[in-house]
Length: 367
Image (tube, rainbow, N blue to C red; front, side, top):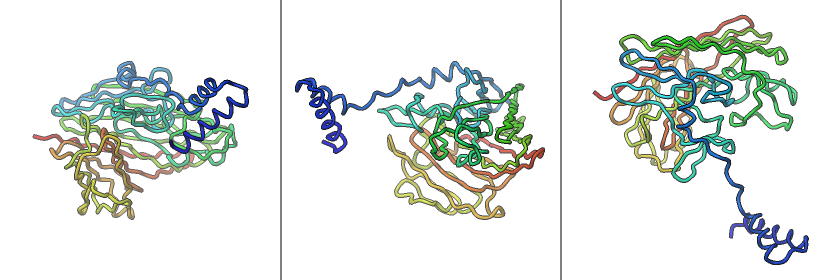
């Protein structure tokens, strides 16, 4: 019997004895003390996705389903990722690139969990497609905010700082005080999202715009961002795209390649999962049912750290992505249902200044 279980059993028996309960009742109390608490109800991800506001765009080569921000009905209402522009599906030449990598969502999950054959995500992590996130280490105003005060998460809104003194965590469900105002403009081949947030208490405010545009006659998606600082304080922010690539299911297989425009230097041992040769990391085998494979990569100065990355399976299906700003860091994370090549940028804007940046995704498919 495990030490923790034995300890719980002893506590139960002692409690029963202290209350003057009979042996049978005491034994029942002991068993209850050693029984794990039941999981919270799981919301099927497919059901939530089907009910969520969304819009379809296309350019005759690519077809995409884009999820819309909505504080009451939106598919994603967590406080980790930007609400704008998550892609539930993108197809090219019969191949699916994005979509659900988890089976359900439950509030008692911190990040994600393997439960039998299913993967259950927390509401904070249940994102899809090329999902942006801002300030994963410490959001705007967190350090200055008193317990119970407010801080700001770009793409989400104004959040409440808890009173327990705990450090910030991307996985915690903070109280959303104000999601700002969202505007959405959709056309046949593009969607533009605009969020305006102002928090005089913390001194931060912004107008954030994100446009998803499919390029005519090309298998290319551009994601154009702009951030105008309308607050009293300067903004310095770190942003990354999680790039939840599913490739129709089980993408982490032998022959999958991730590449960069510079030599890849993993920060962790690759063991027998993958091998690096120059600018390419190649998976040597499929990931197991509950296996996690991840590593950071060393990133040098901007001159040698161009944002020019790619992910393709053994058949050549995948994408290449470029940005008009250099990388500041780079990570890879994967489980059986997802491969995420995560590039980071650092941005800065003084009050009334606007900063812009663009990602250009070119999708590839076997002939």
